[in-house]
Image (cartoon, rainbow, N blue to C red):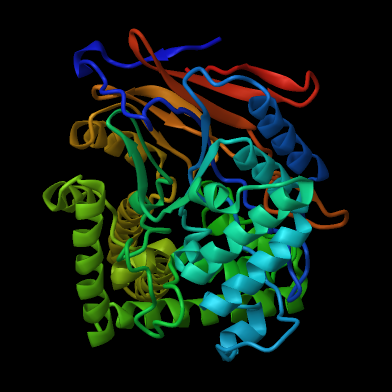
Length: 492
């Protein structure tokens, strides 16, 4: 078994009742990701992944914890609120806007509760196993990620608890009050002093971060949760387009998208172009909202909640402010960011280059010496294109490792744990060990579709963290669906 040891200079860990818990940590399950009433279902969640997650939970529920009882920590994106596109089966208190009529329920509290209801039906066995885990005396913590930021709403949290307790009561007598007390939601991070600092990781990704992590509401309409760049592209472009996946775009350039569009045929290309233009308009609308008075009011509310969190956690406001300074600004906060992220800057450069070359070529027919200018134009185009390419960094993995080293100094811990990238990683990060949890999101291709790349496969990885007489330990493990047990994992 791979055993990751905490750095000895951290000193003796104070063993509070909670630090005596053993942590079982995983992330990025994305329940409900393929619920789609509003467009083509391009990729379906595999039928086996839920069964494997249930088996993993049952395995640890029946295995004595190294310290006391287990605490399951789901480090974000357990439910894919932004990924699903569903319609309502009943009346809603928050009327649908034009975007929601086209793409499915939005991020208002009542919309989110309806989404959770549908997910709980679709993935009832997963919720039942989580309920059995908590009914066994263990605890559950859910950290909000960018795909389940709608857990922000109190009504959604209440419904989630109620779903679990009803599953538990269906299996036998339950002390309802004690059961509910063992379920908690963390909107930002989970911390055990000297042991582990855990968050989803999307706040270090400008394509997915939210401006106000403790008040993630839309300045355009505070009845709804704020949308980021990836949310808009997912709802406006990815979900309605057959064959387009939401992952792998860090490796795509303009040529990939042109080739994909050609596969759709002329009508498909036109529809894709219209979706793309509408997404651009929405992204610039979000940019304008960042400058509004409503955004300033949200900033004030965020400050108030930061102060409250500092008091409740006893972390201190100064330390939380430093933590905020490490986060990435949403890409939608700047015009240049939107331009670069959508390749609009390189598109404009290409059009400008073609026009410049055409003008020089025409002039050269009268003045041969102008051919030197043609060479200069081409050289300038190559240099600027290369510089723009460097500005478009889609994959946040390197940034997350860098931030993990800084986090380990700000929040002393043997292990800094994140998810978000879906790629399991273990490596040194300052005085700590950085662990990325991988994912439990897996897709099956639809026959006849032409996806941009192969469907996502789940790593089925998780981490067990506990304390023994020598200090904090972590075991990075994988669920083996063939052997029906866990095995050691090393990502060195």
